[in-house]
Image (spheres, rainbow, N blue to C red):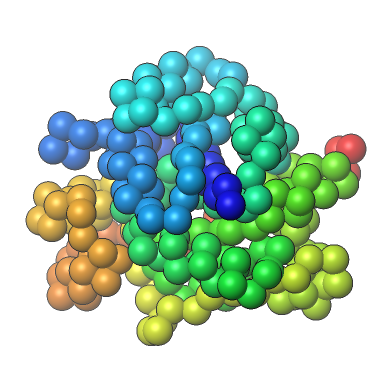
Length: 255
């Protein structure tokens, strides 16, 4: 069984330009992100889906240094970029990750992969009912579901964010096309933010890496934040999934 992980990474960013190239202890956030994904025991291959825009060479240079293949595609049609990255591999399952989650936990990735496979779901994530920290976002779905979305999704929000079409028509949200489910954490940690979208997010992640290193579990990082209120306060007031919310506000049919 081929399980392909694809992480989205781009140089441009409205809120924090070149955020994945920011360094802690001399190592870029992107390299930390990739090396943590590669600790997964179930993923067959990892690829980076980046863009055809100035600065993308910095992304591909890091990917090559870590030994990860890459694909350059559309800036705005992220669904097409993602699909074209996956297509040559013809995987059974695809794992969608994003590079603004530098401390993604490989054990969480494997847990969601296994749950999806064991129950023959078309789509599983830990984000439709968030109980994990923002920054541990993992989606697992059959390649056939991705291909259906690529062919049929026609809203701007569905092209910019890869999986909204699948989630909308999934059984978890009352649809009938895709068998879907959400994985809940044993405790609700959704108030914690370990993603990097804003300068304050970087300061929190920097504090975690400098004090704990880059090889700890999600639980270890959450425990540190719980015990250091000044760290939690750095970014606790930001909205989750702000980019997708903005896409919905400006949505339109484009295909």
